[in-house]
Length: 260
View 1 (tube, rainbow, N blue to C red):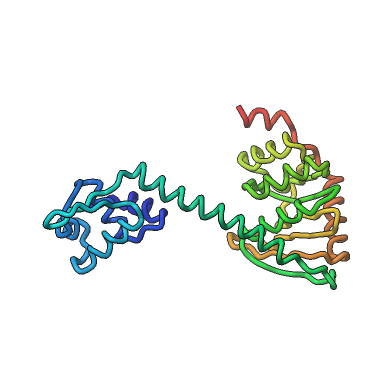
View 2: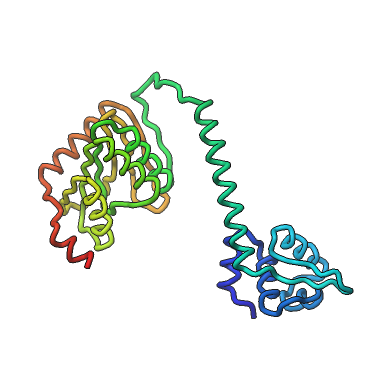
């Protein structure tokens, strides 16, 4: 029985189920002929040569021209590292293409800033929150229960602080240890943080150029809205100020205990 965890791991590199089984068998048994591989992978003999040729094209299998032909796995240290390098090169190329496209497709000026746009998905929300931070000039505020950290939010936050943007983050509800540890990172890197023990699902961010990203719910694939509507932004800013004035600074002593 082939190890299913290993097969799942190999599939994360873009291999199919059959390719993963074949590569695993070759690593277990060494160089083998097609019929042996077909037997131990339980892949039909009519398909095994296509699978082996596909793995060869991906730089994961070698062929010896004996009769019958033998196939051998290229060591995972080299084969998998090569696949990662190929993907990284592809990502670098995509970033260059993206920068060129961004230069060519400059956004049009907003003709109606009263509109409210909606989208969904946790990643999309965090991307929009990062954009709000990126566009901030003097100040940015947010209400959160988790103090999320990911590569794009962290980058925009650090860049904003370097630009002199005053970042205020208000933690709501009973914060978990994980949330408090993430909050300590923001605190150490220049954010002003307070907490208030209210139970609310309101999670949003606003910058000083009146952009709002507001998570409508906290489900895994959350809905959210984004707007430059002055009336809506003003109401949410007043709500934030009301809570901020009732909140307390995050206790440094409890953060110190968590980090030990």
